[in-house]
Image (cartoon, rainbow over all chains, first blue to last red; front, side, top):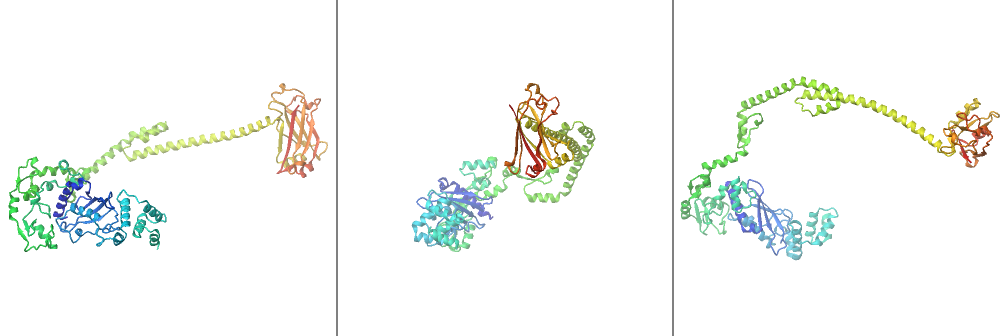
Amino acid sequence: MANIAAKRIKREFKEVMKSEEVAGGDIKLELVNDCWTELQGEISGPPDTPYEGGTFLLEIKVPETYPFNPPKIRFMTKIWHPNVSSATGAICLDILKDQWAAALTLRTVLLSIQALLSAAEPNDPQDAVVAKQYKENHELFEMTAKHWTNIYAGGPTCICEFNQKVQRIQDMGIDEHQARVALSTYDWELERATEQLFC
Amino acid sequence: MDPNKIKNASEGIAPMGITTLNETVLSNQPESRYECPVCLNWLRDPVITTCGHKFCKSCITSWLQNSGHCPIDNINLSMKVDIFPDNYTKREIQEQRMSCPFAAKGCAVKVTPLDLDTHIAVCEFNQPEASSQSKIRVPCSFQAVGCKETFDSQEDMNAHLHNDIQNHMSFLMNAYSKIQIDSDISNASIDAKEQEAMCLWEAPDKNGEQSTSAPLSNTSALIRALYERVVVLEQRNREQDIVIANMSKQLSAFAVAKMKQNNDMLLRYCMGNYIWKIDNFKTRLDAMLKDHFKMLYSPGFYTSPNGYRFCVRLNISPQNPHCFALHVHLMKTEYDHCLEWPFNGRITFAMINQYDPDMTQRDTMMSNSSLIAFKRPTAEICVRGFGYTEYAVVSDVIRNGFVKDDMLIIRVNIRYV
């Protein structure tokens, strides 16, 4: 790994550890390997959002050309958000792409991702299905996002109706997550979700 | 490693993963006005942009190769027109003096921040830390045979393995000859052991255990001990075979005795109610027809456990060879002197018809106290019997369903009155 990238990550790591966000439990950063190319981030769901109370893990890969190129970051925790792929966890955020600036750091990037959870950009979606629901049936979107937060990120709001529907499809022999994706996609209409799964 | 940990803790950094951090890099943290936002290090050949941000010359050059904007405020920048050397800042940084991070270990050197990394790399007080890392030096793979070299890296060791083949060969040779001497010594000690092992034959149990638990230093002694053990076990096996054979003999004898006892019990406790099953009837009848003096006697049975003992006699009637004669005879018992004589009671015969119970032939007689047959017997079986000289016609018995499965059944009931 290029000297500048390793040196900078070391300094950034220290900066994050000292930051008040870490002290307040908003974000966390951990090393995955010894050569500073891979880290694991953790952000807490912002208050007054469906993600409140959840803890989301992020995979951070630092390229050799860092900081001249952005780090590669994706959600490891499954999340229902217009700008995050519900399948792969890929994030659609300008600063991780063309708007990357060398002065940005892992700390500022993690905070930006956290901000993205508070303010989605449905007009620049990563997951078109989620974005459509966000715009057309916002109440259901919030419920679904809360449900996903509850199931995958340890969020506090348990939506029994959704759990029961997932269980019913599971009883037909479908994998739990697959069932949840189908139901979330078809606005929790059992018939349409089932139809799609078995067609 | 340890000094790093302590320092991290005092700086309030979570300890996870950070122990691998090069502490000297962190200790050299610049003030923000001297820090390059790209490499986060001291500004080296600082430049200033038209938007008022300072960078290392090389950092901003690299950045602007791919982007046309300031890394901080995204304002358009051109390498040619918007970047100026910041000699003021450069001079200020060069006037800074920093103590070597190994000052605590005795390094008195003070250098500019920019030269600090270079100095650290060559600082003589950097050595002890390197030697403290010697714990993780790789030992030579021929360590077991005596090579004492250790290495910082696998490559160094590979070079050593390649260059010192000669030495390693002689290490191996020494080790090999040592092993051979060891095994010779233990071979020599076998003869002494042999003597000791021979006494296995005398007392197999005790020494058998010893031979397995004793530490055997070489293979041939082990094989010898195992062979002896096998012989001992074979011997024991044979002995046990004999014991088993004896026991099974005893067991079958017991079984016969038990059966006999059962029959005796049955006869003693039948309360004068005896069922006489004559099997192989055809053969026995043929024998009787051939020789009219042949008679069938039943076992003796008791009217009560310590009462009178009778047996039944079936034979061809001496007066009429077409008829059976059927009599009861008193038999001697050990308690005859306690009984009242002559016997007084009722005797009932029933020849069972095994196909039609209604056809069963029943006859009842009362004893006659004037007859010798009911007096206290003087022989094992009283010579005089009591019953019918012409009880049943032989051909009727055979034809009319009294014999089934080659068996005739006569029930006798003798009751003392």
